[in-house]
Amino acid sequence: DTEVTQTPKHLVMGMTNKKSLKCEQHMGHRAMYWYKQKAKKPPELMFVYSYEKLSINESVPSRFSPECPNSSLLNLHLHALQPEDSALYLCASSQVRMGLGKNIQYFGAGTRLSVL
Amino acid sequence: RKEVEQDPGPFNVPEGATVAFNCTYSNSASQSFFWYRQDCRKEPKLLMSVYSSGNEDGRFTAQLNRASQYISLLIRDSKLSDSATYLCVVRGGFQKLVFGTGTRLLVSP
Image 1 (cartoon, chains in turn cyan, brown):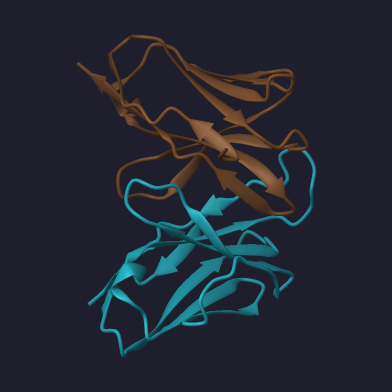
Image 2: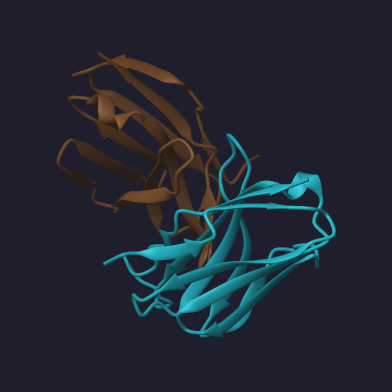
């Protein structure tokens, strides 16, 4: 089972709202990721968590706040977003171990976010 | 220069055709390489990892040329269901994947 589950599937929010995106996996993966994808562009890495600790922040604005409450869950808290933040937000997970075939990332279906 | 470069296409081919995509990467220290497939408005899904010796999975063959720093994907006997965007992906650092812009494939009846 290589399932990564993201909720909600769609989200519309105003620029003053606070909302959260959720991601869950039960594959025993200890690395989890947030990506942002605009139309006709490849995914762009935002954050990486390894063993529930933030290991990579790709200079993401503070209006995006990640949280990893346990090894299966990853949240992305959103506050005071801008219309240009509208995109598909993808969660992924992988094993932490390096080596051939060990670092494959499995993606959730994404949350399609519209900021009005 | 982009870290991972692909021809964006689209590649328009008839069913049954053989089609090949190439991808070049700039970091000679890269160790892991993948092809992902992404359907319109869906998430990327792993198609196959790419190994130094080359590897095949059914109608799909991936090759890696480290000296020239390019990766290829060959699709034989194209199906309508192969229509998608194919993303060349290189591991750019610990846990960090670098995606190419993707090559769009359209298979027509």
